[in-house]
Amino acid sequence: MTEPRQVYLDNNATCRVSPAVVEAMLPFFGELYGNPSSMHSFGGRVAEHVTRAREQVAALLNASPEEIVFTSCGTESDNHAIRGTLEANPEKKHIVTTKVEHPAVLNVFRFLAKRKGYHVTELGVNKQGDLNLDELRAELTPDTALLSVMAANNETGTLFPIDEIGAIAREKGVVFHTDAVQAAGKIPLDLKKLPVDLLSISGHKLHTPKGIGALYIRKGTRISPFMIGGHQEHGRRAGTENVPYIIGFGKACEEAMNGIFEENNQVRKLRDKLESGLMSQIKHTYINGNPRWRLPNTTNIGFEFIEGEAILLHLSAAGIAASSGSACTSGSLEPSHVLMAMEVPFTYAHGSVRFSLSRYTTEEEIDYTLAAVPPIIQRLRDMSPFYDPNK
Image 1 (tube, one colour):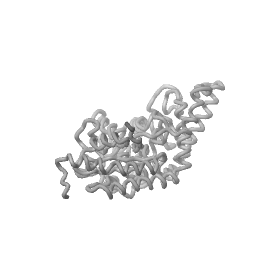
Image 2 (cartoon, helix red, strand yellow):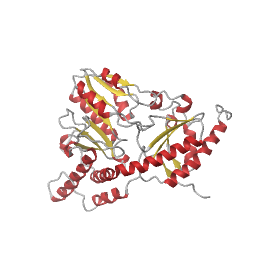
Image 3 (cartoon, one colour):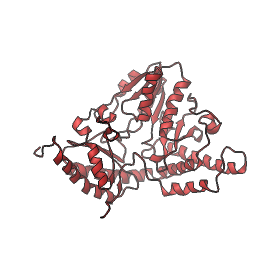
Image 4 (cartoon, helix red, strand yellow):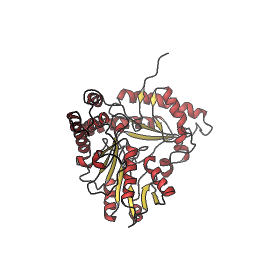
């Protein structure tokens, strides 16, 4: 029996590791094994490479190297930004975020409300996933310690105007954090111009192995260390550095910076081909999110009358990896919190699938997907009690 072709379209979950990243990491599993905090030459040689990697990450964001703190992942970066800011500003008890944040942010805010007595405002979005900036401005008060709004939504790809949001935060004297895990490397981020105080990124969305991230801390921002111990990361994050992954992260950021515009054009064309092909072939479909202001690699499509879990299972059998806009795969019957906040119609929300591409996605893979998906949707609709083929 012939195995189905393998097509990976779940890059917002994690990415294939770049061969150049693997090559850059290999020496640090062998001859360059010193601890970069050690005073001897073994440590000194490694420390030089860590410094170079920090410069590469900073260059992707147009930040200063001393503003970059290496972490284990985007979730740690988010937690450090949020909890470190609040610890450094204990007199303020109001924090603001949105209803469509990643759980690494949203669940922290809800924990702080439930366990620590913070007053939390969760801003809503419209049907395209956009914020009302006048509403945001009105919610910021002298008691607001932190505003956290993502740069790009991980489910729909919708982009948030973090330049305008940051300007409002500065006008109100509020620290502004953005989770840029999905945005970094896909759209330009210039922290010399953007009014952002704290920014989180993660390596495995940039073609590194899972287990490395970074937090940008603008010089002068009041924030407490998240991990306490040694003097690593200038006292802002204790713990021996994960050197091979830091080196790989630096290389990945260099690759992303050098290829961001070319890759965006290539990936966007393939994304648009996939999206327009599915929309033209399959009736009763709906694009979730802002169709104009979104990441170039992401499309989230609602297929009416069927369940996202069933679609994913059939796609997997055909060798296609994607993810659902529904939380059904985690055992819940509710649609995702993002689609619920956008008030996506129930029948679409439960049948939503996110396809996310990368620079390794090929046109042949898109053609294969365009041939495979329509019959899958039709088979599932034929079994659905809610589908009327005459409509």
